Amino acid sequence: MRQGSQNFRLLWSATLVALAACTAQPTPPPPAAAPTKEASKASVRKEPFGATKEGTAVELYTLTNASGMEVRAMTYGGIIVSLRVPDKTGALGDVVLGYDSLDGYLKASPYFGAIIGRYGNRIARGRFKLDGKEYKLAANNGPNALHGGVKGFDKVVWKAESFQDGRGVGIVFTYTSADGEEGYPGKLDAKVTYALADDNSLGFEYQAATDKPTPVNLTQHSYFNLAGDGSGDILAQELMMKASRFTPVDKTLIPTGELKSVEATPFDFRTATAIGARIEAKDQQIEFGPGYDHNWVLDREEGGGLQLAARLHDPASGRVMEIKTTEPGLQFYSGNFLDGTITGKGGHVYKRHAGLCLETQHYPDSPNKPAFPSTVLNPGEEYHSHTVYTFSVQKP
Ligand code: GLA
Image (tube, rainbow, N blue to C red; front, side, top):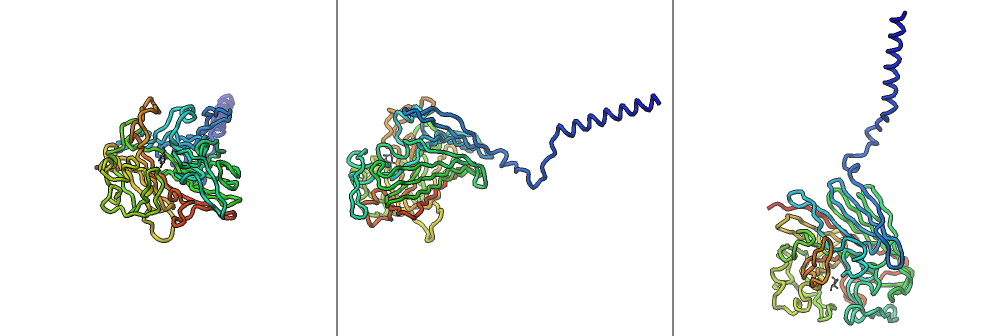
């Protein structure tokens, strides 16, 4: 009996241990509902990033995909603060210029990493006519209006919401631009979605709706250096642009209206060419830049949709960035105005050509160039523009 009760007690305590183990370990979900290995590794994080001079709180989002690529973007201007992608050895490096903290962006920024709107690039003399009425914008770039005005979409605090779904991890930025803001007609509801996918692609989807006809041309103004922020200039990096024509400019960088062939000019990037190869060529257009600061007319197949526009390759790090877009134009700006007066991330001094911009867009000054594809958005229409930058490596 004693033996028996001891056995019973042993059995009972073993049962209790087993029960405790069972309750301590939650039942694993059925395989169908289990997140994939990749999805479980991707993440989105939000944290405070200071406040504007007016006291509006700014937040910073960190998006990480399953492969470890990381994008940090903030609600002020939708600015991409850092973009870490692998090189040919797998080491992550930040490939965009900018500042370490909000303060730098508030003080002086040549549009580092920002959403540009309501109208990306220049409108001649800050004037345009729409339905017989003339609109006047601030001349904030010599005689012309540039990048949406004195306080464009790059300098406002956007509302933001993060998501994690089939598109990857991302942020939806929204901003309502009031009727008359910066001189533009109509209340414009803008929405820009950043989506980081596990294949190291970063998508930008721009949407907008208006209550009065207004020009709209939204883009993203990241300054890339595929060798890494602060690593010197971009002149050895090789660029291919799928464009047989470009829009030549006058000395104030307003298109003349001509769509000029790139054939036998320093503007021919139909095959990959080092950016520095012809950047000092004796060519009036290069002198106007000075350097590259022009819109290329993309060679597009019939039927719309995302199409290859450009490919940038850094032979040293092996990094490649490919751009696909629904837009008809691409502004290639070779960082000509960076002059060493800006000290950015990690104390890096940004000298001439420290970074470059590839801005998908409609052509500059379209509101004054009836022959260019129209940028007018009418009430009841939806503005839609989509661009994807995909990062990879090319081993020699
Ligand atoms: C665009 C313009 C350039 C310059 C930069 C910002 O790329 O085309 O001329 O204004 O933005 O400095």
